[in-house]
Amino acid sequence: MASLIDSLLPYHPFKAVYILLASVSIILRVPFWLLYLIPRSLRQHPSYSLKQAFIIQLLKTGSHYACKVRSHPVRSLKPGAEKERFESIAPSQKNIYRGILDDPEIKPGEIGGTWYPTVYGPGDAKRKAVILHFHGGAFVVGESRKNYLGYGAQLLTSHVDAWVFALTYRLSSNPGGRFPAALQDAVTAYQGLLDRGIPASSIVVSGDSAGGNMVIAFLRYISENPDILPKPHAALLWCAWVNPGKSMQPYSCSKNRNYDTDYLADPFTEWGIRTYAPPPVDPTGPYVSPMSHPFKCEGVPMWMQFGNLEILADDIVRFAEGMRNIEGNEVVLHEDKDAPHDIFLMGGMLGFQEKAEKMAASMGEWLKKRL
Image 1 (cartoon, rainbow, N blue to C red):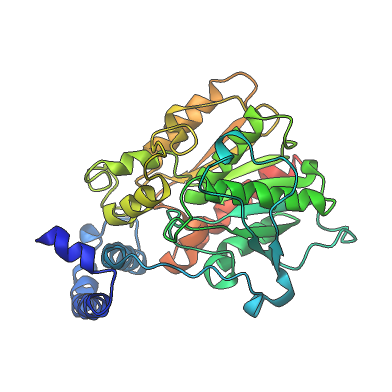
Image 2: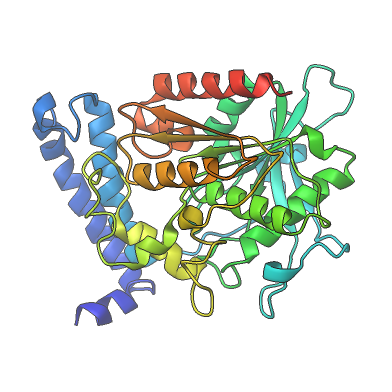
């Protein structure tokens, strides 16, 4: 009976009724949460402020309900409020989509992206690099525009003299968005920057959460196919989702030692991996779940960040250690104490602005030495 109800929830009128009931349920619980979380001893972690504890509880509960209806975000390639800062890029005519990207069903398509703080201009002597960023959202939600990525983009531009080009890639919550669609879009964006006259030595690839997973897949692709694309200057990974395949297992989040201190929940991560890597895609393969598949990435220094209270913490540490053990790889692992998942993207909403600024400053100092 439960599975029948779940199958009906993504469709109206069941969807509308469920959203209404879920909203009422959350509203009724808000006063209880606020009262319950006043004592520090009852919060998810004693270091959390009342705001941090409340928002984490709200996000975890809200995402559980939201995943039941499994909405399909509209990916617009129109400029919108970003105006000239939003740019569309057609798939390359060059033979750059080979091997894992040469899929019989999923073909390269037009992409879009947003420039921060302004459109790239080669005459700007102040800025020394372009950061190509892939947003997080479990492959099912998110975009490059200010309303979603503005906080993270501001962290980058405040601590590095660089332009940011954030990619709006195809989401797996929409038809035709399964793997390797997002990786095809990443390759299209990178080639688009090269076609603009930006040298690879000036490009830094960056990604948070699922976007960090995309960075790893992108680096693996160019490492395995060195004749296709030149290597970027460096890579930044913010709470990278390095083992999505684990979310195929029941209760993978709720069994984690950091479940109480993080806002990630099973319905969200399961929705992500089941739509991103459905059959015939292998959800445990190296391009989808790289944790147990380290590879040689010589010449591209990697800066990896994680919060010690997030669900992905142990997986990220294991992946970093595996990459470090390969001769020629350069990996720096930055740990944020008393922080949940992805404060790069969510720090402003969650109330972790101070930690996010210090984190970005640390990255900036590391990257400035290499530019």
